[in-house]
Length: 118
Image: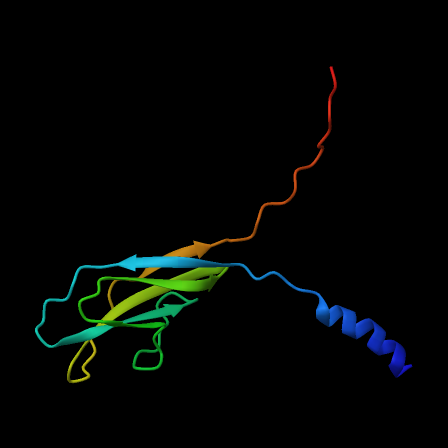
């Protein structure tokens, strides 16, 4: 019986499931403090729910940069905030929250397709 179970499971594991994702770009006004070290971009699937600090950011952005792109954002509604941090390791509070509803699912096929010959 086990031998036949493998005949079912192995082909199923070899099927490729498509994964859809998007790239999301951001831009902001520069922080003008002289001891600015950089920015941290945080992402969440829940509005207002972020864990701040090094290691929790989606992207660590060096000072002098006011744009970034996050690649591979999966389908769903996502929220982001940006913080600034200085050369002493102090981190600002979060920026305003921005969001995007990512839907990279391709449309369904056309229906009722037919050929009409005159």
